[in-house]
Image 1: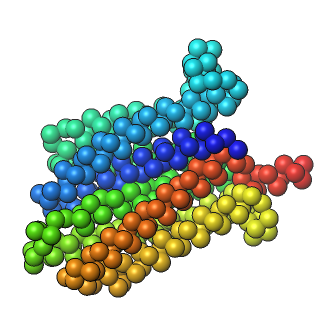
Image 2: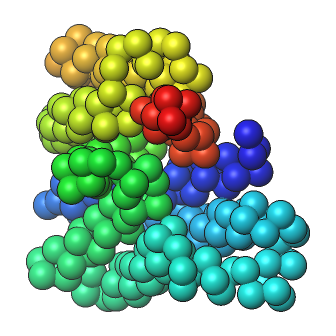
Length: 304
C-alpha cells in the first residue's frame, strides 16, 4: 500500500471538499443572509482550503508519476514521466481540467461581483466541476457500467462536499459570540440550521443512493464485500457514515428545535465536531480504497 499516495489523496479530498463546501454553504444556506459576519469567515476558509487543494493536487500528481516511474518526485519532472501522465492518462487529463477549474473558481470568487445572481450560478457550476471531476480520476472510469457508475460517482462527490464541506462553516456560525445572543440572533440560528439540515437530508439521501450504485459496480456481491480487503474497508466506511447520519438525526430532531437554550448550542457544536472527525476518517478510507483494486476486479483477475 502506497502511504504517500494515500496521504496526498486524503489531504486533497479534505481541502477540495472544504473549499467546495464553503461555496455551497454560502449559496445554499446563507443566501439572503449574506450580511452576516460568517461570510467573511467563510471566504478565509475558502482561500485557505483552495490553496491547500492546489498544493495537495500537485503532491498527488507527483506521487502518481513517481509510482509509475518508480523514482523520486523530481526525477519524474526531468525524465518526462510527469508530462506523459498528463498527456497519456485519464488521471492526468482529469487532473489538468480540475486544476483549470480551480484556477477559474479562484478568479470568480475574487471578483467584486461574485454575489450577483448569474456569477453565483457560474461559481456553483465551476465548483461542481472541481469536485465532480474527482470521479474521472477514480475507479468509476474503468467500471463495466461506465455511464451509470460515473454519473453516480459525480453526484456522490458533490453531495459529500455539500454535507461534509458544510460542517466547518456551520460550526463557525454556531460559535458566534454570546454578546450576539438574542431573539433576532436565535431566529437567524434557527433559519441557518433549518437550511443546512435540509441540504444535509438531500445530501445524505443522494450519498446513500449513489453509494449503493458505486458499491454494486465495484464489489458486485455480498460475498466479496465481507471476504476481500477492499470490501471490508468499504464496510468500515459505511459504518462510520451511519454514525454520522445518526448524529445528524439527533441534531435535526432533538437539538435544532431547542436552539433557544444555551446548553443546546454547546451540544450541537460538540456533535458537529464529532461528525467532522468521522468525515475525515471516511475521506482517509476513500483515499486508501482508491489505491486498491476493486473487489470485483480483483475477483475477476483471480478467476482468469
